[in-house]
Length: 182
Ligand code: AR6
Image 1: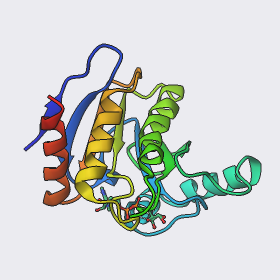
Image 2 (image 1 turned 45 degrees about the vertical axis):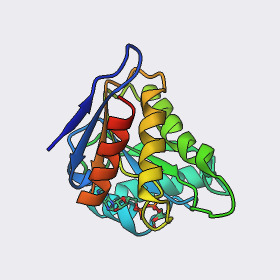
Image 3 (image 1 turned 60 degrees about the vertical axis):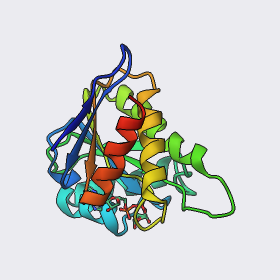
């Protein structure tokens, strides 16, 4: 099943698919990275495995040139897509979930900044994972709501924002968030 929301003028259409983000035929895929940019588990590990060493080399070069202290939470930066179908990977650092501090603005920033970088790349199609909802512990329904609300309300020339959800639970959370906004 696929869910779809056509965007208002100046925003991206939103598509939900179940699957593996590394297999998507899109211009850019977004990576739920960490501030080191040097890889990790989850979707980050999968992207580096599928895309090959060229991506890590590009990340090391970014660390050496512009991000000596790492990429800050809520920011985004692009590298080559290496061997992926996607021409580019946009690395963004989601916030770790906190029960005592509201970090929603940082999670929204990941989606907004990723779309801004996608615009700089002239990307028409961008695939997103459910940022922060894995190892970083963000509750899925809330993470889905923030993702959908932010992408719906961000001006961009990107035509398609494709959320690639790894399992049924994530897919259902995003489908519910999409329905809630209609
Ligand atoms: N395709 C699509 N979604 C995936 C895939 C995949 N191949 N693999 C996992 N997911 P996570 P985070 C889903 O943990 O929470 C890394 O170590 C997964 O089910 O990848 O932002 C980084 O280096 C979940 O819904 O990212 C950081 O240290 C979502 O992707 C840290 O994890 C995000 O889960 C970032 O944690």
